[in-house]
Each structure stands twice: as C-alpha cells, then as structure tokens.
Length: 594
Image (cartoon, rainbow, N blue to C red; front, side, top):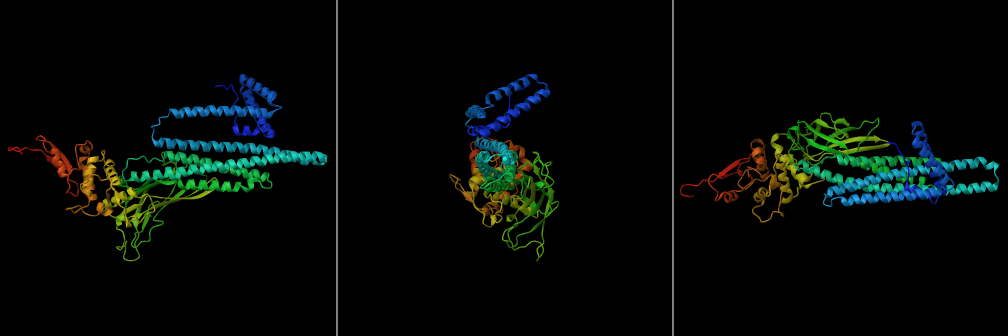
C-alpha cells in the first residue's frame, strides 16, 4: 500500500500549543518537520516511488513558502488541526461507550476502567518522552548559541556582547520554564501511577487472593492470573520507562545547570518515588499461584502429610523479557516467622528447596518456579524425642506457612521479593486428614489474614450463610451436583433445630468438627464427609442425575411418601452411620388398607 499523505512521528498537541507563544520553539518544530519530510523524500527516491517522491517535494516547497518566515503560524495551524482530531476521536469513543450494554457485569466495567488508566499511563509516558526530546533540542540550541557567543566575544563590541547576553538569558529563562513544566508532568504521571498501583494491589490482587482462598475449599471461581499479569506487566514497563527518562533528565542537568535548577532540586525526589513504586509493584507481584497440595489429595489442598510429596508454585506477575545475567533463584522454607508457643512443632523441608524461575513451566510465558517433589519432616525436640504433648493446639489446628524468597536485579533495580502460601495443616497419618481438612475449610471461610497462625486459639463463629455455601462447595467440587435449598435446610435443622429462618444462626468450631451429634458418637463434619466419600465411591452417577434426595429428615420423608401409590420410593442418607449410609424408603399398602 502506497502512502499518499505525509505522516510525521512525534507530533504532540501540547508541544505545538506551547510553540504558539514561543518563536524559538516554533522554529525548532518547523525544522524538525522539514527534516522528516526530507527523510521521507529520500526514502521514496531510493525506493523509486515517483508519485510519493513528487508529492513530498511539493509538500516541502509549500511549507517553506508558507511558513519559512513565520514558523509560529505553522504552530497555530498544526495545533488547531490536532485539537480538531482529538475532538473527533473523543466523539467516536463516546459513541462507542453509549452502545455498550449498561447491564454488563460490574467486573467488566471495573476492568475496562483499569485498562483505560493503563492506556492513559502509557500515553503520559510517551508524552513525557516527547517533551524530553524537545527539551534536549532546546538545550542543544542554547549550548550552541552560548559557545558561539563566547567564541566571538573577543571580536565583538560591548554592545553586541550585551545584546547577545540578553538573547541567551531569554533562551535560558525559556529553558528553565520548560524544565519546570517537564518536572511537573513527571510528578503528575507518578501520581497517576501510584493510584493505579493502589487499585491493582489493594483491590484487584486482594480480591484474587480471596477468590483463591475460596477456590481452595471448593468454590467454582476463576483464579487465573493472566489478566493481573497483563496489568502488572504494563504498569511495570511504564515505570521502568519513567525511571530511564528521569535518568536522562539527570544527564541533561549535568550538561547544563544553573542556580535553582529544577533538575537538581526536584528530580532526585521523583526518581526516588519512581523507584519506590517499582519496588512496591514487584514485591506485590510475587505470589503463590498454586497452593501446597499432595497429588493424591488434589481436592484437599493445604493439608500435607509428613514424608509425603507435595507441590507448590510461586509466580511473578511481571513478564521480564531479559532478566539479565542475574538468575532469579527462589528458596523455599517453612515457618520463617512461626509462633513461639509451647509444643509448636517444627519441620524441615526435604527435596530441592532452591529453584530458578523460568518461563517453561508457565502457560502464559511468565516467570515461575514449580516445586514438585518437596516433603516435610518433623524436627526432633531437644527433650523427649519428636514433638511435644504439651501443645496448646491439637495437631490439626496448628497452622504453618511455607515461604519463598528471591532477588530481582533488573535495570539497576535490586529488590528482595518474598511471598508465602496460605496456612497449611501438617498431619502425620491418614486418620487426621478429615480433621485437618475441616481446619482448612474453617480458616479459609472466615479469615483472610495469612499471618494469623494462632487462628484456632480462639476460632470465630461461622454464620450459616457462609457455612452453607462452603458445605455446598464440598459436594459441587467433588461431584457434578451442589446442595439445593431443601438439602441445606435439612442440614441447618440438624445443627440448630427447627427454625423459621436460619439467616442469623451461627455455629462454633467445636460443635462443627469436634462435638458429637445428639445420640451419636461422631461429629457433624465426620458424618458429612462419610456421606461424601460414599457418593464418590459408589453413588456418583445417580447422585449427579438427581435420583438421590439425600439430606432428608425422617419426618420430611414420611410427609413426602404419604398418600403415594404402592412402589413409590426414595433414597436418603442415613443419619446414624458415621462412614456414610444410604436408606431406602418405599410405600407398601397392606391388605387392611394401611
């Protein structure tokens, strides 16, 4: 496709508007534009594109004739055209937004807002880069003028020298004013970057971490990190570019400085702010993508058994094309800041605890370290062999954390990155598995503070609204069917007794997982898990098809079967069997009519 219209790189509306009141700046822009036309003309000449060559020759002649003596007029024309173009583009964007369906999910609107902020940040960085180029050209012009004046000073009259000094002082005043404007633009840009970073870290990343907690206990939620990685990467690239541009300002300041130079007085603070934002972003971007999990217990993450292998994967949400010669090695450890409670068990991690981050183990091409064959081994206490029987918490209520640490060295930024897993429960035999899983469910249902390792020293009550949701997830994550309102109502009745409304009901941790049900020798949690195991082993197909009513009281069972014809039956779960039982109930009419 052959271009028939001239297109010029680096055209900036603000820069042209500034040139309207600045003859020197207008002259620089005019000359730059003329140079670009000449470059295009030369290229077309080499490519033998005669029509384009003729057109660009005509463009050059017209511009020289119309604006050669009055570059300010050119600035007025270009600024007006760019302003008109911006109005047209804004109108198109507004029209597109009015077409959008207002009933779209809140997430879509929120994500679109973040995308717009990131695009605004990119545009701001590009504008600052362009301003910096113009500033550099102004400084070069001043430098050339100053050296020429000094060279000719001995051959000039005092009056001529005085006139030249006035011109130089005027140029320096303009340069100083433009330096202040550039500093102000960088300051505004960093403020916008800080707001964006707050949104990404305090809102989006925090929400993802909460979703991950719920997903760990069975919630059907999307925990993909691809969108966050896209946003974090775009923001990081902008900040790295800002950091490089601020370094360029420092170089310009070294070449030319003067009293109250803003590059000396204000630039260092901006560089410190940019570095601080980058450090904060990179530290927040180091997360645990896949929580610790044993392969044989894929549906029960965060419960680890000593001497059994488990996997875990930390990930950096910033794609770095070239990390440089520095290899990012991630080291895993356990209980780096563990409680000092009496009897609190200590563990060692066995296996390869140090691994280099790479892109091969990530579907998105990002940096991650996939630890696949780690094991935990309990340390022997100094007195009395392994562990201690004086612990304030039982084994399955004792929470531990696996931490990861690495060092990032990239483009003169050196940052230590740390992250940690969600709290894990460490068991030593299979009989503790269900109790450990109960602790994981209770913690992740009610707590979002990953550092609260003493959570079970005073566990909070669970509202039925949250507990019922978590109980339903236990079934939907292991089968293809969740618990409906009637089934959950039966479970609520079993826990709280018959009530009109269970919305305000709460249950204690002990009653949920430790205390036996009335007239039984097992807890509510063990009874429920026994039923779930029964379904997974023998009844999953007919459960998924809805042929098992399941959770139904005897009273409700009789009311459903009453007045039904002979042969009508239903299947419900036994309330007296710890390991899961199924009860068959059917209608049979005797000869006496009963």
